[in-house]
Image 1 (cartoon, rainbow, N blue to C red):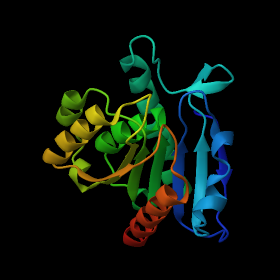
Image 2 (tube, helix red, strand yellow; image 1 turned 90 degrees about the horizontal axis):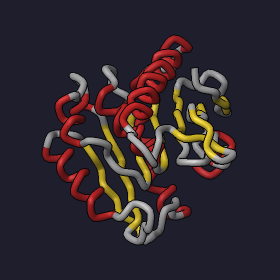
Image 3 (tube, helix red, strand yellow; image 1 turned 90 degrees about the vertical axis):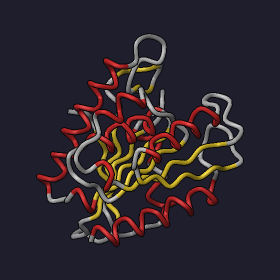
Length: 209
């Protein structure tokens, strides 16, 4: 089981949850700012650590070698996390997943394969692993999932062009993806981007409720 940090909502009975996946070399601690910045008092947060150590932080998969084994292992672990939250009382339709960079890749990967419809899936500054294989492995509810995918036009680590094409390909295959571009590098573009994320989450949990 992945190590995690739970940040409760202001309302202890709130049924809404955001599962947060960090990027390469980061950790759950790197997203402790998110609850106050998103300012959604009805949202509980589960901040996760990826399974592999990486220079003081953690990694979801190997970026230097063959990525697939790590991605498949992390996918299984994230399925287990989501299933465990269902058992805790957080219904999938009231659960949102957020991921940055490597966490974005895992969010898209999990969202298209997880067999239960989630409230929403948010991927920031990442890319899609093996899109053609992903298309063949859509879950029965994949086309019912709602995605928000954002990227920076000046991202030096993951250039936007190929990601734009990947997202267009997935949309053509029937995934419901809201695509937003920001004038930014490999980061979150402050309140401009957080505002888009906040609105998406508010709509997701309202619909899920």
